[in-house]
Image (cartoon, rainbow, N blue to C red):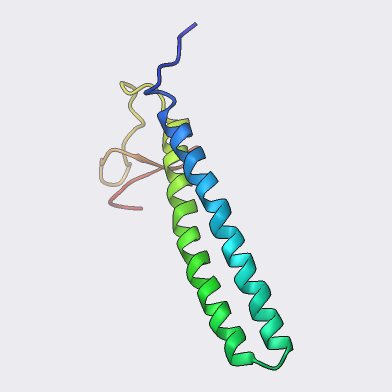
Amino acid sequence: MKTTTSDESAVPREVRAALVETVEEIGQAMGLLREAATDADAGNVIGGKMGGSDALFILSELEGKFSEMCAKLAKWSEAGDPEEDCGSCASCGEELQLVRPGKHQCPKCG
């Protein structure tokens, strides 16, 4: 049985730490959305939209962070033996790259 080194577990630890950081940001977005709905219900639609805009900014940043975490984790979890060839593109011959779990794609042809 192969033993795991800290280098081999760095990616899941890093993704876990990044995920923990997002919890606070999700809470901030929820608070802003609650405030936006309350303002709009009270007739302050402009104030509500301002809060909604702030929440939108947080959510769009989270979307990028989640995409980055997913890509990093997919690349790590789906990586085979570094010496193993994933194959090449039938159209151009370029080496295939991992784009999501179980899916390899040519960087040139798509």
